[in-house]
Image 1 (tube, helix red, strand yellow):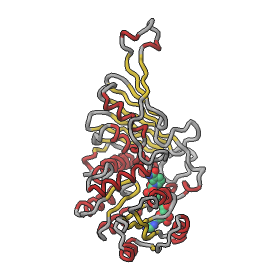
Image 2 (cartoon, helix red, strand yellow):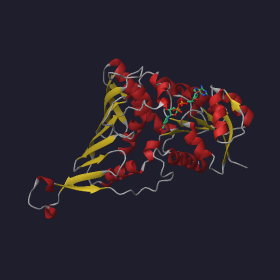
Image 3 (cartoon, protein in one colour):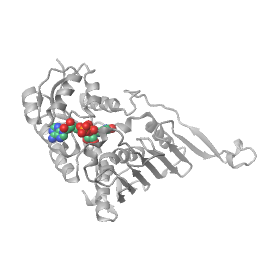
Length: 355
Ligand SMILES: NC(=O)c1ccc[n+]([C@@H]2O[C@H](COP(=O)([O-])OP(=O)(O)OC[C@H]3O[C@@H](n4cnc5c(N)ncnc54)[C@H](O)[C@@H]3O)[C@@H](O)[C@H]2O)c1
C-alpha cells in the first residue's frame, strides 16, 4: 500500500517537473488530477501513463479518490481556495510559490492552517542550489565577518518562450509577486532567516514591456540583523542577462563575497601581511573560491524542484517542520506584500503594518 495518495491540482507547465519526481517514489500514487482546463489534465495523465480520474475542483477530487496529499500547482490566484479546501478536507498540501496571491489570501490561509493538524509546505526550490548553500557557508564561516549589505540583481527577458505569455503577463506586480518571492526568500535564507523589518519599493514599467503589471522594481529592505538587503530587477531586460537565481554581492565587516547565481561563489579578504608581495594593487586582496559541501539530493536539476520535494516529503514522514513550512515562508511573503504596498503607496512600509 502506498502511503501518499496524491491529487495534482493544476496541470500546466510546472506540473510535469513535480509529477516526474512523484512517479519515481515507491510510497506515492497519483490518484487524481484537477484542472479547470480538462484538456490539460487529460494530457498530463497521458504523458505519465496514468489511468486516474480527472476533476475540476478539489472537493470532488478528494472525496472520490481518498487522497491524503495535494500538490497545488495552479496559478497564484487559485492557491488560497485550493489550499484551504484541501486542508479542510484533511489533506496535507505541498504548494507552489507564492503561498497566496495577496496578503489577504495569505492571512486567510494562515487562519485555516493554524487550526489544522495537516501540514502546508511551499516550493522554494532556489534555496536548494549548491551555490547558495556554498555562499551561506561563506557567511557562516565568519571569514568576511558580519554581513552589513546584501544586494542582488535580476535582469531577464524570458518571453521568447510561449509558456511565459500565460498568466504572468496579465497580473498586477508580476515581477514582485511571481518572481521576486524566490529572491526575497533566498535573501532571508542567506541572512540566516533574519526577519524583514521594512521596505521601500519603487516599481516601474520598463519601456516595451509585454506585461500588464510593472515588470521592473528596486527594493530596499532593512533586516532584523541590521543588514540592508537590496533588490533590483527587470523581467524584460534584453541582453546582459543574469541567471534566474540572480547575481549576488555581500559586504561583511572583514571582506566581501560574490555569487553569479550559477558557478561557485567566492570571497575576498585583505591579503595577510606575510602573503603580500611588492604592494601592487592586485596584492591587496586574497580571493578564495568556495567549495560545494552540501550533498544535493535531486542533483543535476538546474532548478532543484526535486531537492525541495525530497525535504518536504522527509519532513512529512518524520513529523517535523520543513525548511519551507508555511510558518517560515509567510515571512518571505510579507516581504513581497509589503513591497507591493510600498510601491502602491509610494512610501516606506514597516512589516509590522501587515501583521
Ligand atoms: N518554483 C518554480 O521555480 C516555479 C516555476 C514556474 C512556475 N511556478 C509556480 O507554479 C505555479 C503554476 O505555474 P505554471 O507555470 O505551471 O502555470 P501554468 O499556467 O502553466 O499552469 C497552471 C495550471 O493551473 C490551472 N488552473 C488555474 N486555476 C485553476 C483552478 N482554480 N483549479 C484547477 N486548475 C487551475 C490552469 O488551467 C493551468 O493548467 C504558479 O504558482 C507559479 O508561480 C514555480
